[in-house]
Length: 144
Image (tube, rainbow, N blue to C red; front, side, top):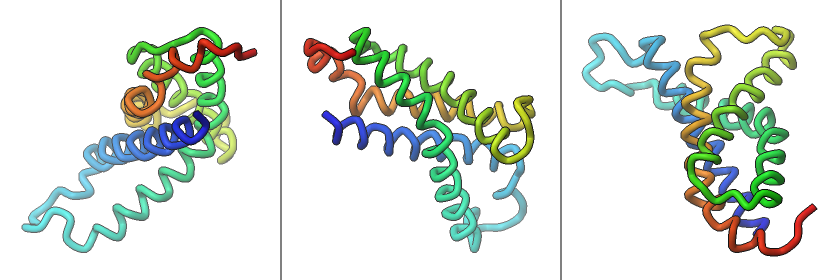
């Protein structure tokens, strides 16, 4: 079960990071312009954004994720919408923790919330797809 949860978390972090970065880059217009090849020489830059985003997301979202895993096991969650909403809520917690850790305080700029919540929703849905939908099968065992 631990391997499935871990794989689900890694996939959720990857998808959440990709969605948040795609939204951020769309707003920033990084790929806009007259470049006939949209990615051009920016592939390295994009990969760097993804790796940095995954590292930050992995660390900042972990406390909320652990709460969701505990809730899902103790309450026998297996519905996709619970994990999706939990992913969105965890995105808010994660961006708040990141903002505090980086010296910004608990007030989150709207520019950080806009891309992270959809990313968290997508990450929660992916986690459900990989691991969360199987919770009711293992939750028959007693968890604290």
